[in-house]
Image (cartoon, rainbow, N blue to C red; front, side, top):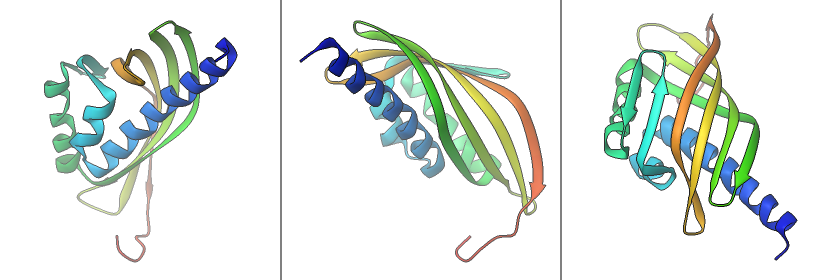
Length: 145
């Protein structure tokens, strides 16, 4: 396989890690996070640092306590691949439905990411969450909410 084709495959797989991470957050699904978090991963954000996959997974429980629901949308991603390691930046918008009223808290996020290839897959070794800005707005809940 040519280097160009392998690069395209790797870029797609790296984006997929961000999409699985987002789905895991919204579903509070620790099995999904286990797929994409390396055992030695570090997740950092405003006011917190979690080191090691087992210490990162409880973040999903915290999301479930703080918010009725969340919805993360992955946008553009830039990556630099160097063999079995990669670095990059992933943009995301995260909507958080607050528990106490029908208000949405929106975060404009940039993740500073580092990955390592594990077999045929890529896993995060570090995710640094940067919140560029927040917005709150009322929401009308639909059927099934």
